[in-house]
Image 1 (spheres, rainbow, N blue to C red):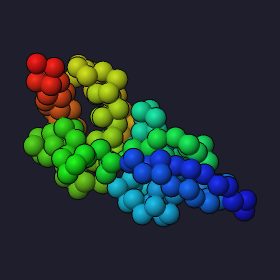
Image 2 (tube, rainbow, N blue to C red; image 1 turned 45 degrees about the vertical axis):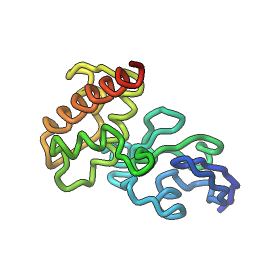
Image 3 (spheres, one colour; image 1 turned 120 degrees about the horizontal axis):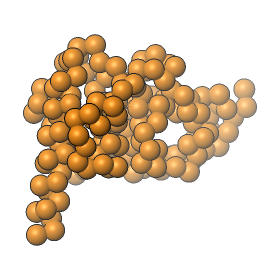
Length: 164
């Protein structure tokens, strides 16, 4: 198998790697960079467990070749916290008890962050539409939607305080 040199910037840290040309970003994140927060679910882009942000865009890492991410900024759920502080979406998932088994949660959190970065004040309908494609078998989605709404309000409030 052909090996390619790639430079990935993951969660703010640069990595120069040799990867097989057929390796997905998911495989590289989990196996080479030891970042197990990005989950393997279906391997076909249907479940959303592997969701990451690449240059701010929501992407299924199981469908993205690692070579296609060369030179790009990748954020996983672990990379959302800053200086030991959880991202407001992560905190809201805890506060709203939107976590049960936890398997889908990193992908749900990352996808929710992607939404709020594009639309800081989404309607419930927009949240539900945005989260389509991320499957959760435990929560029934209500608490997840509540967590995204709560995070949206907290982020808006924090922005107002920062400006004022």
